[in-house]
Image (cartoon, rainbow, N blue to C red; front, side, top):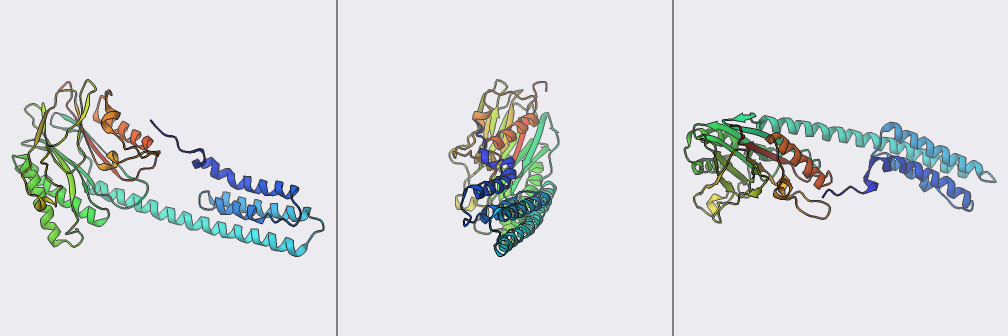
Length: 365
């Protein structure tokens, strides 16, 4: 269930609150003794407007507050020039300060927006969108950046049409920034090479593990102790694509959505290997799981930006429950719906980036 944001969080509230304060100051001036000072109501108006409203509106509220305190002083009897000068000058000075604050906040917001655009451009360059078809499968991918930071994330996905079938992965590198980008590049490079030449999916995972460990020894930006990557590797053979093999290395489980609306998580075996980069701590061979993949079925891979999304009550987003009973003509429509639903679930307050990859075995294939 979507939980609405509180009424006071809307933009209209912040737009009218300064005017309410000015009006309240004038009303109270009429009903209180002359020695009561109501200047705080007037100085609060432009200061509240400065960080959230435009320059024009902030300046207008500053002029309104200054005019209001001047009118208040004229009403007083007897008129006190010194008091009027101090109060009017105080409100005017604070109003100018509010305009300066508005410009500082606007400049900061522009820098953050520019950094976010650059980060997303780098993300698209390192993790390009896959083709809409791979073998007999329809493919769609989405990347949704969180709003709380402007750093490059460590989410990744890839799809390759190989001699061994369609192979794909979704992963999440621990951390953000340059170190995460370097790790993403290493993992994707290893995957693209290994997916083409390794006949077994477990060997692809091993090549990726070895590449990350090797690069960690030589690149100072890659954390040699805590750096790791969770991934799900998937293989859909071409003969025909009626089954799915998958290996889970510490990642949120994929979701299988059948043509009848039945949705379920693809849980890995109990002895699943650790995330990439931690394999030496508990060495064991990867054992791919296999499940049927009949026509009309969707397979959804995603990062923890989806599974760890929470509403205002702290309830985690459950992808299976949200997809159960639903029918989607194409994977792109499915992912668009999931992103909208996650944003609604969090009240438009995403805490982490989301990367999603979906493939469909078309019913008409």
